[in-house]
Length: 329
Figure 1 (cartoon, rainbow, N blue to C red):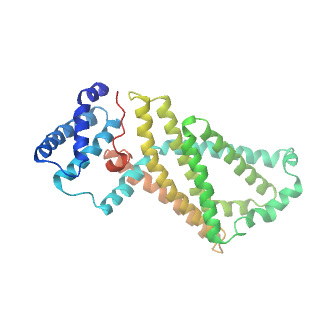
Figure 2: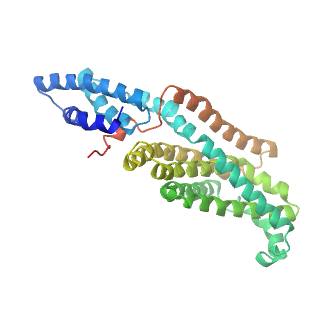
């Protein structure tokens, strides 16, 4: 089925349904008209889903259909039901859609970080970048003191803000296609050189003890943000059968869902970094907490997200939040 032609033929009916569904009160004749349009548009939606499940028209039709249904039934969605649906369906499937790209970015990040760590340990030119005395000071006191020189609550807030800023940049400028690789490369370089300095000074165990509790999830969140940003870029480069503007709009709405999830993930990571990393808990427990947070994310993504994906959930915004945004000529 030619989606664009189908839209051109039926757009006026959908617009009329949207106009009626947006009114607070309807006359009897208008209510009858809305019922007819609701039934017809529901059929159109089923046809589009069968022909092209990922079409942005699916989301744009869901909004007026939902409002019309509320008019006809006299009831709206319960906020608790909507919240439960978001956290058990919409959010996990949004993470699930970018799982492989998240893993690929993570593997590339680790490879770059490992290369810089190896270079830092073995290359004599490291003295030109960071003299021996500076490396000793960094490994001996500065690295560990970073996690305890501020009160836990303010440090957690600072970490959350900083990481959220990095993630926001990846999301906002991901459409360029170059910003995400650049940010990941710079951060991998910094992490790798820090690891190299600590290892060279015999403090590798200290490095891992302070990095792993929060870093497992925190760095993964940066990969997630990068994957979401690159999906926007790919929607612009290769929109498929959609118009480029429609593909960008659809991916952008799904990106909003991911961005909301990242706020929560980075909040959890910030709490771990602010309260667990510098704590006096046993080493195994601190690292175990960080590993449990990361494992929880992947279970949430693969189990709930996989189930929602198989059920046809797309990770797009809800019908009332997305609105009718599809542009048609």
